[in-house]
Amino acid sequence: MDSLSGIAMFVQVADSGSFSATGRLLGLSSSAVGKSVARMEARLGARLFQRSTRHLALTDEGEKFLLRCKRILAEVAAAERELSESSSGPSGRLRISLPRYSGLFEPAIGAFMQAYPAIELDLDFSDAMVNLVNDGYDVAVRTGELDDSGLTRRKLCTFRRLLVASPAYLARHGRPLDGAEMLLHRRLDYRFPATGRLEQWPLPDEATQPAPGMVCNSVEMRVFLAVQGRGIAYLPAFAVQRELAAGQLVSLLDEHTQARTAFWLLWPASRHLPPRLRVLIDFLVEQLQDQAFGAQP
Image (cartoon, rainbow, N blue to C red; front, side, top):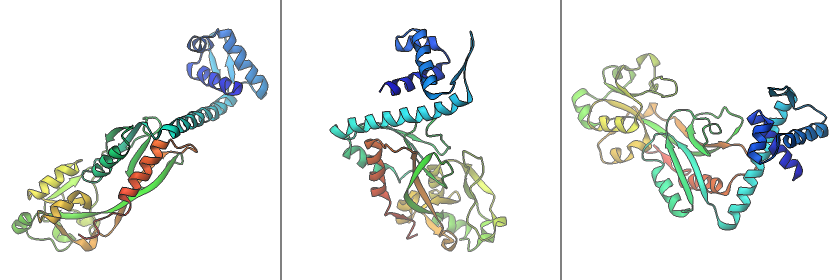
C-alpha cells in the first residue's frame, strides 16, 4: 500500500505540476512530497521530473510511467467499486450516450429502471461522436465499425432502413418503380451531424440520388412529414413500425433496402467492469438482440 500511495502522490504532482500544490491538497509539506518522489525515483532508477526553481516537468520516462500509474489507479478504483457493490447489489450512476432514434431504446430503458431502481441513469441523446473517457460516459450506443482500440464493444441488435411514403403522397405523385423514377420525387433527407454529409439512399445507381426537398437531423420530423405526405424518407424500420402497421406509410423498392446495420454497445476497456455497467450491458442485449427490425417490411 505504501507503493500505491506513492503512485497516487506522483500522479497528483504530475497533474498539478507542483510539490507545494500537492502538499496543500494532501496536508503535507512540499518537502515531504519532494522526498516521496525522490524515493520513488531511487527505487525505479530513473528520473521522473526535471526540476528548477520555478518549473517542474515530466521526463520522457516520467511521461510513460504516468500513463501506467493512471491505469493502475483506475483499476484499483474499479475493483473497490466492484467489491462495494457486490455486497448490496448494483447501484450508483451510469452516464449513457444514445443515438437520437425514437421507438427503440425507450421500452428497454424503462424496464431496466424498474429492475434496478438503485442505479441512477444519466441519458444523453446525440448523433455526434463522443469521447467516452474525456466526456465522462460509461457506455455509448452507436452504429458503424469500432476504430478505437481503447474501447470494448458488444453487438446490441441489427435493423434495416426502409424507403417509405404515405399512400396519399403516392396517389398524388405516383409510386416510383426504380431509381430513375425517384428523381421525380421530393426527398426528406438526413444530414449527419458529425460530417455534415447527406445520407446516401440505397438506389441502383448513385447518380440517381434525388435532390432533397427537406434536410434535417431528426428521425421524428421525417416520420411526421412522411405521414403528412410531404415526400419520401429513408428511415430505420423500428422508427416506422407503427405507421407501417397502421397503413399510414408503405415501403418502396424493398429489393434495394435489404442491408442491415448493427447497433453496438461501446465502453472503455477495463478488466474490472463495475457491476452496474455489467448488468446494464447484459440487460440491453437480452432485451434487444433477438429483435429483427425490418424483417417484414
